[in-house]
Image (cartoon, rainbow, N blue to C red; front, side, top):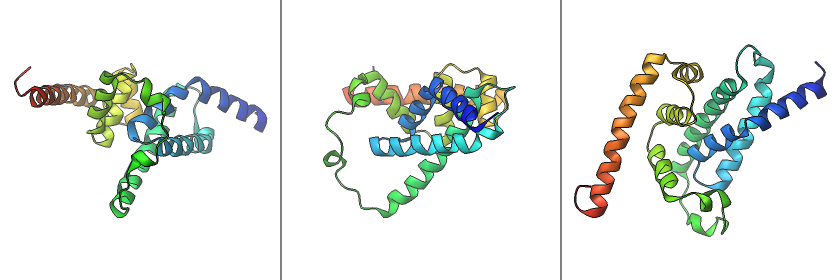
Length: 176
C-alpha cells in the first residue's frame, strides 16, 4: 500500500470512529485545552501505531486500546504536573461558550462527575461499557478477562448507585 493510500485509509478510519476520541478526551480532561492536547496526542499515537493494526480485528477495539493508554499516561502526567503548579482561576481562562459542555444536560454532567471519581482502569471500563461494547471487547481492549470485566462492572454499579444515594441524601438532608 502506498503512503498516500495508507494515510487516506487511516484518516477514513479515524473519522469513522472519532467519537471514541471525543468520549475519552472528555472523560479524562475537564478543560478544553487539555482535551484538545489529549486528542492531538491520541491521533499522533494512533498514526505512529497504525502499522501494527491487524485487519483481522475491529479498528474500534484497537483504537480504544491505543487511545485509553495515551489518555491514562496523559492523566498521570497532568496529575503529577498539577502538584507543582499553583492553581489559578480557570474561569478566567475558559472561553465563554464551550459548546460541548453547554449542550450537556445535568444528568450527563452528573454521570461525568461520577466517572471522574474513578481510577484509570475503572474509568476506561465504564466508558467502554456505556459505549455498548461486549464484555469480550472490553476484556480485549483492557487486557483483562471477561470474568474480571463482569465482576468489576457489578462492583462499580453498586458503588456508583450508593454514591448517587449518598449525594441525594446529602443534598436534601433526608433519604431519597
